Length: 333
Picture 1 (cartoon, rainbow, N blue to C red):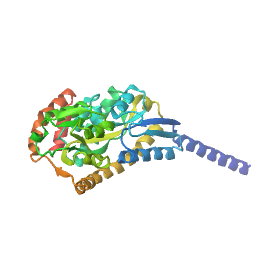
Picture 2 (cartoon, helix red, strand yellow):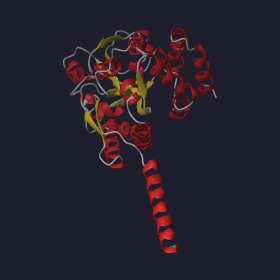
Picture 3 (cartoon, rainbow, N blue to C red):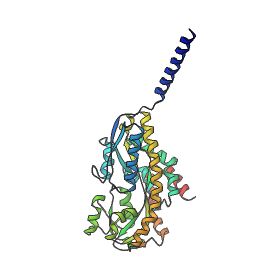
Picture 4 (cartoon, one colour):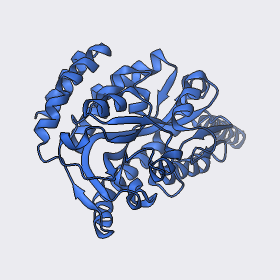
């Protein structure tokens, strides 16, 4: 009898242990998500997204997969963001400067000539300011940010050297369509021309524009320096990007799937940030070695003075003057 009771207790313990394991096992959705971005396949962000997709698939046992469409093969960057907001695309590579057209508070991340270092950016984007703006997007336009990363400070590659505001006057420059870019170049006295990135090289080659603005890596790897060998280290804004998912799609995923997506992306995010920061010095040297004329604004205070009123106006437009005050406190530490 004692043996029977002992056996029954053992079976009960095994059963309860099995049930506990089943109860604690993550419940991952079986889902395939589409993600569109415009970057080339040899750029760090594509490598990071590819690694993220691989980690997700592996850690979910193949349940969660991401189909990545790079190099604007599915949508241009702006169209991809619009598609996510409309609910016709699962995910895109969001850009806070472009997203500012839909969520004005994101303009605070990209205010021209305001953020001057990655340490400052981290305190803003990964702190309370960033959390509040991400929540505004989730609440108002139906999209969820999964974690922003650095895409490098933006500079200028032009057919003539730029060392002062006077040098900018009338220069035809390719611009993204977001208001903050157009405002930046108009304030500098340039003549911005909205052209998709996929057509920017041809536009500069044919003389439609006399310059482009982007990161140093793009100038080098995509050959823009062969069209205009003047590189102005304007650092006029920090490009901030990251995966953005439709709120409807996100809300349909289990809590376990959501957590896995955030945790795995956090790993890729940290690695990407480190790589981007390290790459900037490397590509500046490569451009110099290729014979480029490297310049900067000789009187940066003159440039900053042009934009202080714009910072205030942008914050007022976004009903975010309190957030700007917080940012200014961080910048002026």
